[in-house]
Image 1 (cartoon, rainbow, N blue to C red):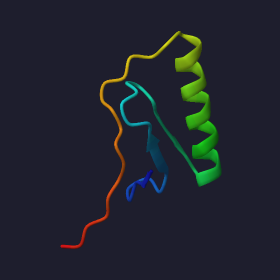
Image 2 (image 1 turned 60 degrees about the vertical axis):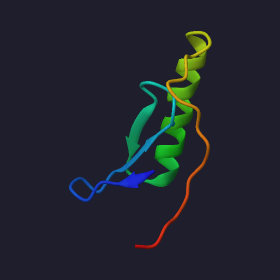
Image 3 (image 1 turned 180 degrees about the vertical axis):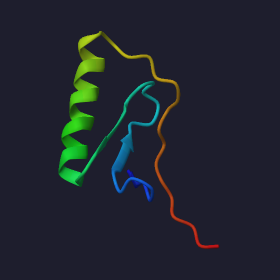
Image 4 (image 1 turned 120 degrees about the vertical axis):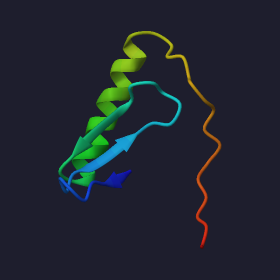
Length: 61
């Protein structure tokens, strides 16, 4: 999830799922929208993953 500095909207995507991205005015709205997107992908059958998600990592520079 990210927050767009230009629009103030929260933006989220599901790694590896093509087309699985959305936005919302709040984190709750974003989460609901992401659930809907994933649900639609699953209704279309087994989605083909573009990549395997292995995790996130924070690093200091």
